Image: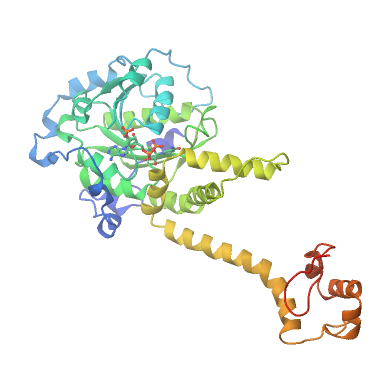
Length: 410
Ligand code: NAP
């Protein structure tokens, strides 16, 4: 693990390797919905401000890196997991600044604190009471949080608002070796956005904890944590900070999966997006528990509940900001049609042959013949021979009319 975590991030990715990142195709061809949302005012770009390089000396940086956590370490740090193989260059706590302190921001803050690191938070809404109760410093503005110069800035805002949120970061207030990480459930979009906006000195780590407040409420053990070290300097404090940040999730027991953002989005569209879509469809059926629930049905009820507990913004983000989602939606559509066709097609095929084409079935009396007319029971028997599927369909009180696919009540 240690070696995999310390691996350089620019692997196999031309944009990541290049000091001037390639523009994001997604951004170029996607409508900018964020621009329509009610958002923080966009702050001036970093280029017009004082260079982040000038803000601190390297000695100051080391002191800040080694500083004990302030205000957020009320819970005793847990002992490191025995199974961990992660290098720990030093044991200093990180200061992690969370932007977007909603459902997921609060959830992930818990794990960061359990590992003995300090959490600073800011959000569009006021979470100062929650933060006060949980030993977290809450800042009413992103500027105020950045003035604290956290080691890691963790973007936990909705996918839809991320572009505006990231553009509002006052980069000049941060130290140049700051790591900007994100937890978005899509990965190519934030990767390209961060490469485009952040100065080259800033580290970029794109992550997706593949769990949330519901699925991770009993702990994070064995839950997948996907990460891509998009840009991390091999030398200096940045690499150590990155390793320490990732070790939070390893020590919590997550299954660490290093994967490119593009590969993540391919897998996630075929798994997570499908799951959310099925959950959303089931929610439209307003399913209720019954006295005879099967295990399978219980699973569907649970899926529905889990899905709708996430915001619709999140679901829409999974669709809009993953280039593979539309294809999956189309596949799902076709799959549903195929299943319907398999059901109705079998029955209709047999009946149409008889009714329209007047094709006699081997061993069966001609429909409309005296035998068939005179003996409904005999006719039903014969239908069984025609096709076992046909025989399965009517109840004992129904019989097929040769004239049309209708039933006659007893
Ligand atoms: P969400 O609806 O995706 O995001 C809510 C967060 O976004 C809140 O912090 C909210 O701030 C902020 N936000 C929304 N609109 C905003 C705007 N216009 N300007 C500024 N901030 C805005 O729900 P979530 O479950 O908390 O997810 C947060 C992030 O975590 C998402 O990127 C999601 O993909 C990722 N994630 C979620 C899960 C999960 O299970 N929920 C799992 C893995 C990753 P306020 O609360 O202050 O309004």
